[in-house]
Image (tube, rainbow, N blue to C red):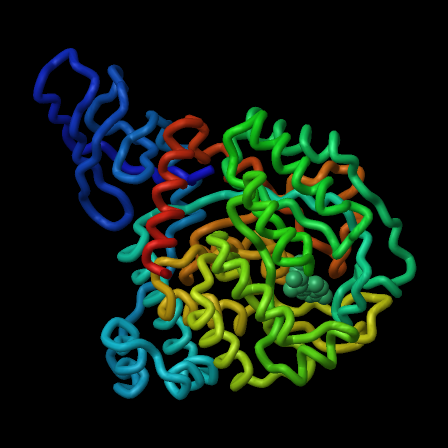
Length: 431
Ligand code: 5AD
């Protein structure tokens, strides 16, 4: 679903009294703007409305409006006097020719508090200019925690002990998605599992087909390495996107952390998915043991080369029963820097605040992410009884969903149309 934004009505201009469409002038946290309005006959000057994509959707109390503003408003007042001119040049350079690898490194290495704040604020401005206040809330259903792989960081790796393995039945998966779409207004749902071949390709096609038959929703598949042919048929069955991270673009590190897998094969599959016309969500981990800032710069440039539509990145979090259990976690600050720089590199991309960032920063991680260039949130829709078992890392955050859902746009047709338009706009740009 899309998140609506509050604004205060300053004037109402209804060219033909009694007819539904009015133009409203409103004031939001960035100043005045003119909106079209859905039929809101009671609306008066001084009221608060929620709007999405330049359309006022409904009236809300001032109290509710303040609650959501509190979550979205960046609390940053920056005095840029005194900043290193070289730093400013790099920040501004993204609009005139892109960021160089050296520029990215300069931003990643900055330890100056004012520079860091300026980077986050610039990313927020670029997000506003490129995609306006288009915040989305997506859902994820983690339908199986079985996995045949041995990724060194992941708590669900084949060898990990102490995991109660589960599999949802196709019926359970379909009905979980249906409830989320019809009952709670979700428009984009990711179906994720470990690399679990208990679900044959045919079973996955069937699940996608059944969901598409019952509800209007974008389905993103996150089922790991399968043949390109499987991905082709999954798309034909109705899947719109894939969520498939390359994890790190440093080949030696990739091969060391993924025994039995091949970096080349993974990248080839990712390129193949893009060629099939999938909306591609991909990304990498921040703070993996053995990863340098240079590697992170290369990861980001790789995202741009791959023309990723959705950039999904999160900090590495050490997990028991894995070879990396005793290593240090990636930092929230570095993750925010990476989010901001990705926004400068790919102004129109969708960038979710991932659960891993929320896990190390809780609710504040959401707010910080959204005011540093990110524009969407991914909420967990996995049935309660399985959630704790999908432990790719410990203490996974399942924070408050209610306050966000409350301001989501539920009008099914309208928010689906908006999301569709935005997704395809992003698609156009990335081609
Ligand atoms: N810390 C952070 N992210 C992890 N993932 C797996 N294990 C961890 C971990 N320990 C991420 C991987 C994978 C996604 C589903 O979860 O990037 O692609």
